[in-house]
Image 1 (cartoon, rainbow, N blue to C red):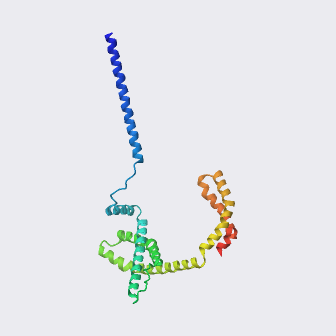
Image 2 (cartoon, one colour; image 1 turned 30 degrees about the vertical axis):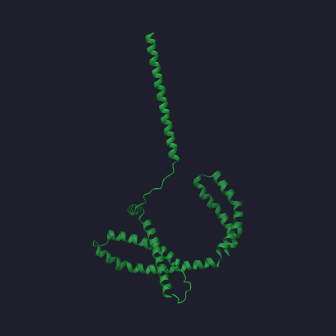
Length: 251
């Protein structure tokens, strides 16, 4: 009987230990689930420390290492546009101050010559940055070892033709931009496009849904673009013939 009672106590202690261990595990799991939910729905706090100038410089240097030409083109376009905008703004401000009337008439606000801004941006990004990139790469590899000699070669041999090219390109860009703006205003491009788009959209719904449907159904994904380009031959010919309001847009 004593042995039976000892065995019963032993079994009861084991059962209590198992029950207590299971309850603790459940509580731990519940606590973990609660913390997970609170972490999910906890609002994200903005970083109080902004990016430092040194970090921005490091990122810019990494871009120069990975994409040297594209980075230089974008930088040159932005810097050239900013310099042109600043120069035209200061020039218009000085003109307004010099022509200040004696009476208290309202002065015209300082204006920025946006044609010049876009002209300098296009020249700086597409032409100047590309030429300078390849020229300085060649000069660093094949040029003289002395920095003074390299500067003399750059300023005496390359800089004068670059200045001539710059002024020619700027004049051409200014003329083209102004002519495009004038033609855009005189031809009423937006009004004609809107009037031609209405019939063209209706006609496109008679053609393109079937073309796209059969393309998706019978062809592979890699052939989608080629098939739709072939279908666009008929659509372009239809528009050029005058269908779908194409005659209004071509006037």
